[in-house]
Structures are given as structure tokens and as C-alpha cells.
Length: 287
DNA sequence: AGGTCAACCTGAGCGC
DNA sequence: TGCGCTCAGGTTGACC
Image (cartoon, rainbow, N blue to C red; front, side):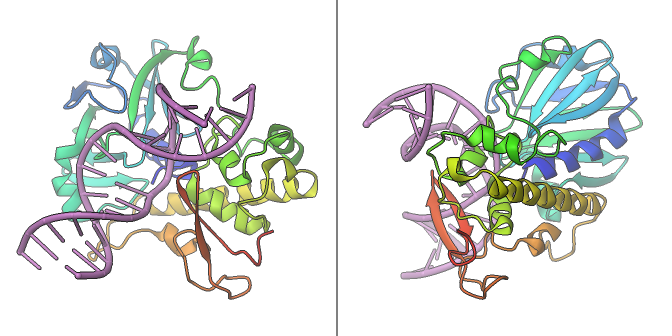
């Protein structure tokens, strides 16, 4: 699930239980994530206090009191599960009760923060990763250095987006998924924002400028803000007995809705594949 | 240089 | 019940 809003939701959840607390232990069950967990990862964190938890794009940043920064990416299937004194809750996503119980198999890294509270990183597909950096070297870290602007920053506006799309022949859908153009967007919110802005995902990126760029930026910000708000509301939510997933999916207007009537015109939502990813859109409403 | 695509890995859902 | 196939919220390295 993790795109920017989900990662932000996870960040807030982790901040609530980790900020100001010492990391009393780190247990690693598997080091072979997308990249191998760096040597000395456990030692670098253990005994340190978490000053704050930040986010850059889809990366979580654990700022420690000695200037160490742990970088965490959730990949496609990564979750952070907070486990406090018996009660277990998931941050940023719903988890089926059975999955939560069986989740141990994929809990690759477990942080203890005292008071019996554990933060478990669970990631079945192991596309997630963790790395170490420092406050001084963080901006130049290879994972972060090339990232584009944060879409929710005030400085990110229509002209800023248009400037980054100038000369790009690639479809706007692919351009928005490129983290160097804008950081933090994923397949769901790109589809939703393009629908909201009335822009075809196939349109050449360079043609998105002027009023179109203004509308697209407004749509992107709106969908991200709404999703973060919805994510926040699911933060403490318990899994329904039926294991029903997400609040989020009820607000999707095109994503995953192939064949459903377009909320705008009633014609069926189409699905196409662009650069290997599904794109959902309305060919009548989106030009 | 820019763009496209398979590969990384596991699980869920669907058709038969 | 089970098998086999397709697809999945991301990133990247190899290849046109």
C-alpha cells in the first residue's frame, strides 16, 4: 500500500510511540531485504533515543540523538506493526487478524522502545529496505539525492511542475511516477489525480503546462491531503471481523474500477497498461 | 540522454 | 481441494 499518504500515516503512528523514547533493542530476522541491511545496523540504533521521525517522499527517516538517521522504505508490501503490551495495532493499513497472527514469518526487523512496546517491520515481498545515514550526509544519500520536490510543499505549484515536465516526451502518467520529477506519488494517486484534473494519462508530459499544470497540481495536492486525512482516521481502527480492507478504496474514483461507471459521465472506466503498470481512467472525461 | 521493461519476491484471487 | 496463471501500493539496472 505505501504511497506518500500511507507513509505519512505510518510516520505519524510511529512518532506517537517512538519519539523521545530509547531504542532498547533491535532484532533482525532477515537481512536480505531489497538491499542487504547494512552491517552494524542494530548496534547503530540500540541505546539511542529517537528524536523525531520524518519523511521524504516514501522514505521514513528515524532521527536519532547522536546524529544517526535510519532510512526505511516500505516497498510494496511493507508494514509497521505497533505491538504494545499484548495489544497489537497496525499503522497505516488494515491487517486481517489471521495475517497479523501469521505475520511473524515476515517480520524481518523488530524494534523495542521500552514499556513492552515493539515496532515490527513486516514485509512479505521484501521490496522494502533500511539503511543508515547521518544528519550531515542525509541530503547527499544516494536514495534521496535525486528525488524531486515534495508535492505538498507550497513551492510545488503549476509552474514548478511544468518546468520539470518540459521537454519530456513520455506520457504524463509515467512522468508523475518518476520520483525525480515529483517525489512520493504512486500508481493509485496518479490515476486519481489525473482523473480529477481531467487529463488523459497518455498525454505527453510536456503538454502539461499553464492552466493544465495548475489544475493537475491542485488535484494532486487535494487527493494527497484527503488520503492522509483518511489514513489518519484509520490509524487506530481495528480490523473488522470480516477482514474488510480499507476505507481508502471507497474513495477511489477510478483506481481498480475497470468497467465501473465513470463518476463523471457514467461511461465505463478503462484499464490500460503503461510502462508495465495498470492505468485506470475515463477516456471521455480525461483529455 | 531519454525512455521502456524485466526482475526482484511472496501472497491473493480467479478459472478450471 | 488443488493447480496454474495473473496481478499487486515500488524501484532499478539493463537494454533499445
